[in-house]
Length: 262
Image (cartoon, rainbow, N blue to C red):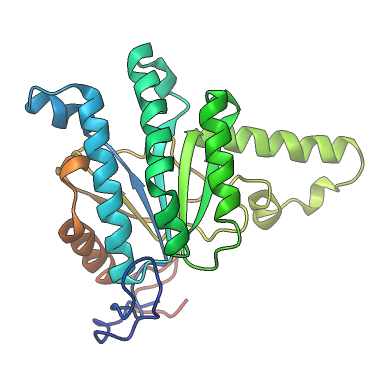
């Protein structure tokens, strides 16, 4: 599939995340994933606490959600808390959980007003009960929304996701309800936490790190990767636009030859 040229301005469907009437067209990624990295370093450079850095990261998320609306991006998945993040100091983990609750309360009405559906992927059973309850309530409150999707990856790990999917398939095979010979990529994908969502077209990682850090390992088989040294709290609409424009110049061949339509 060859990516198209710049879309005409003002042709996007109204109500996609933000203001409506935004630029859309061939070549705009449908699904963008972001590893929100660099909050701690951002705070350290300013002699602030790591909590201050994470709070600044929340503001960057708000800006990015609004910028997705201007670009016509339908799905935004953000890596909010990994299965490995429990290794951080207890006070930082507690602060992150409190900030998550703060975000839920602050953004609830806005998500509903904008017709955004919130999804969560991960293993939320380990989250504090109050945090999980408020998160579940927000997911339910937005479940009938028909607009774009904001997907939070919370207590998420790609390897664990794959292992648990394999375990479920093995159990079905052992019970005789699944023929192992019928397991293909489509069957396997239906057992993943992202079942029903298209794979990400574009992964963005701020902060200068160049790795995927156990994020959406199965789903990113053909995802385009974009890295920037900008720390997440400083990430703004201009950086998202730059990533999207870079994406649109790429020729996604999925194993085919250059210039072939997929």
